[in-house]
Amino acid sequence: MTLHQVSTVDYHTGGEPFRIVPEPPVAIEGATVAERRMFAISNPELQNLRKLLCFEPRGHADMYGGFITPPDDDGAHFGVLFWHKDGFSTACGHGSIALAVWAVQTGRVTRDPSGVTTVVIDVPSGRVTLGVHTAGERITGVDFVNVPSYRLAEGVTVTTSRGDVVVDVAYGGAIYAHLNAASVGLAVTPEHYSDLIAIGREVKWALNDTVYARHPVDDRLSGIYGTILYDDLGSDENGNPHQRNVTVFADGQVDRSPCGSGTCSRVAVLAASGHLKPGQTLVHDSIVGTRFDARIVEELTADGHSAVVPEVTGTAYRTGEHRFELDPHDDLGTGFVLR
Image 1 (cartoon, rainbow, N blue to C red):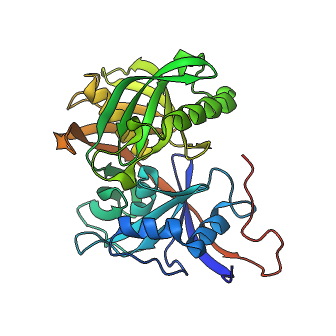
Image 2 (cartoon, helix red, strand yellow):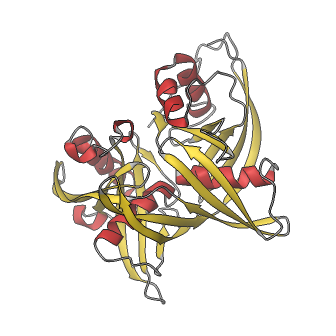
């Protein structure tokens, strides 16, 4: 790898990192963000850049980030390619929230004096819209409106080392399997962290090459991106469903936040089963105690399925700027991963 320096701006959303590369030093070809993702998957230089920023010693097994790209057309402010330790993902809600905060804080998108600034981003799964709420100079929250989301399959039996388990499969910009943690004797708490990763990986790989993992329209979006293990915590004081989840995605990577696109997928499952209705809010906690609120903003048909447009509310905080370097004599090169 000939690249020696790259600059990033880092954020966290609900505890989950997001490393932004405003000016990727490697050309990313393609007319759309979806095309650029496929180019990146096959391009050794971009794969090496991803590894340099994600792998140890500059990152870690649960690092996440994105390369800023041009938008698909003038209807969006910019595009992004999301990446993690195993590759390039189709969607990332927590990353979209971080990007909206970054865009307003840096002036890339002019702050609206009304107190709500709209940021539109092209991602591999489509176009997402975010409303950044401000009070003076302070950002107080971000509403993330995702692509239409829907349940793909209900009550799918998967054979695992813990016996047969039953999952739902749903799309929220990426495809997720949904598993009640109690059904495998677990709870979504840090004490069960290793066991949650293990069963999450098993379910993902058992389903990944099956018909349940196929996107109905665009095969570039196919594959089980992750397993959402959830605890049902009943209802809050207003009668809204309250759940806690951990999303185990890619190959054993753990989302510290409640997972943005995963929450959208969860909204789709709960809407399909009648447990979340328009006007209600899903109170969605993470394994570290951070929270997203989610709701249905529209019911429609998408890709041949009854679908909803979900909105997820959270916020992100800047953690620093970095200029990473690769010494050409460094025997570790782009680094390594310990999971």
